[in-house]
Length: 189
Image (cartoon, rainbow, N blue to C red):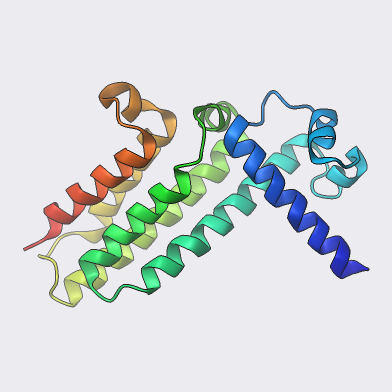
């Protein structure tokens, strides 16, 4: 029974991820979500003791799935430059289906924003690792990997808040593609 319950909870979380990415989450009540997901509010409470906890758990689910996808793609690359480009482009691909409403809701919700910032920080640390490895392998010129990663993280945050879109007209995924190109040109010999 527990396996069936766990599977159903996973399916519900995945469905909520898709719903939130497409439509945001702020406008939904728990009753709305229960109706949309064809379940009871009690079932949703099993996924989070409040709407805020549910939103947080759904975001964590999204980022875990996205991270697994991104890392799987990076693992296929042996070339340091392609690893970084693959990493940033994979992030862009994971964010491609995300609606502006979702990003606006994340920006307006302190707990959701905290989850997003935490994952951006983790992404920054991962980029620093990839750059440092490339420098060590001689594929990149000697750069301060943490500094470059910090710049990337700041730009990732600007992408998330819509500042890049409003300032440049680039969509989020396109901005990540441009960021990958810029970083690689900046650290290459």
